[in-house]
Amino acid sequence: MADRILHFIPHTCYVCGVAGRAGQRLKRCVRCKLVHYCSKEHQVAHWKAKRHPHKDLCEIYATAAARVDKPRRCCADRLASADANTNTGANTDADANTNTDANTDADANTNTDANTDANTDAGSDAAEAATRVARDEGPCAWHPSEVPAVGAMSEQEHFERCLGSLKVASMLKRRRLDYEEAAPLVLRRACMVCLTPDGSEELESLRGCPECMLVFFCSDACREAGRDAHSRVCRSFKLMAAAEAFGRAARLDKLSNPYPLWMSPVVQPAAARLPAHWSDLMAIRKAPHFAFDAEAFILNSLSLPYTIIRALEMVTDGIAADDSLENLPDLEFRTSLEIHILNSAIYPELVAASKYEDILHWLPSIICLKLVFVGAPLAPAMRALGTMPPPELCHACIAHAPDRALSIELVPKTYAAAVADGDVNPAAASLAIAFNPELPEDHAGVWAPSLDALRTAAVPTAVTAYTAHEAAACVDVLHSRGMRLVARPTSNPFRGGQPFLDPGHLNAVYYHNAYILAACGTLPDVGASCDHGHGHDHDHSHDAHNA
Image (cartoon, rainbow, N blue to C red):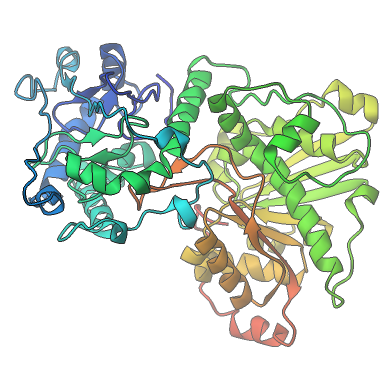
């Protein structure tokens, strides 16, 4: 199996990421009921894996989940009409009473059940649901108020229950669990309507949506109550699983480039603004036709270089519209770019670094492109990577300009520390960009000194966010540091193509770089207050998880 699982999706095969289908049975671990497999071979592979073998975690998962589950009567009887004879039970594991001892490799062959939330309701129209989804706007978010789940647990309570089980597991393991270990607990599925958890004492097995098999209901009544809300996002759930399975296959096949780009190596004949949509860009770039799962996976990687170009356009336009700021040269007249990528880590910024060559493909005037990846999370990666050679440019770039160059520098520090130590020169930056930094969560600590350094040097700065709400909160953070906004938050047409499961919601997904905003310089009449009022925030620049 793959050395590392980057994105865990409940009720898909832990090894290959394949999702179940109506009538198709995935195998579920009988003891913990939190991980699934498409075959006994994959179950055994996970049981004996070199990294995080399931045999070391199964009992801990089961104990942690059981300790926080609170018996709660399913709300289906409250949702059904008084005269309906609704069966609120669910199918039970066929072999739940067999082989509960999973301590040996032999047990791994049989420590699963074959009852996998199959649902035969073929009447769902979820396949036609819209695909534009983000966690907190329009069809992306499902709110409990949409269904009459009287007395049911809220999504917040369910998420707190999941976090409670994670805390128990960490105590049992006597250390903090990493993502791969924690995800089955944090992303535990439950009935979308009444939040009855999967595998609890009150309900052995949930019934999955027959289209995506990733959103669940405990009964026909709950399924009917949540049908409309889920139909708006069902297709995105299907895309999420398909794209993840495609990516797992690419890594398992040990491709030389595990994130293949498959974009035609063609330099645009003349400078042009980016089009309005991915589909238009793919046509201009003469990309071949991809299956939907491959395209979503590829666009998740290409989102980074094209979001950089989009940010350059936004800051150039925004600064030009502000009479108090010095205009930047139009992109078509620039010959060099230096991009500072903040809060960088090995994934996703540095994986398949050749993707950044598409900046040169789109901007024909650029001869020198320098990428400076700055971030404390780079430190462990640099120990493994050593020095990172620049990607070899394609024949089209060399033919366009023999002296064209793409260089990469890694600076394993916060941006504030890198500036203070002279490792980066903010005055040389054409753009600083932070991809999905989640600023509102910790800006007063780690991010504050870096934002102050960007403001003081008047570095054009772009920030992306997962949701509209998060983007608005980022604006508040930037204003709190005295930074002048030059481009208000807007949806990013070049967001990542692969949806991801929202940990806090059972019927919502999010996308990388879904929203983008930009700032440059200092707000009028607040320079002094920023230098003196905000400068006393705690500097936790040693924190390896932030910029």
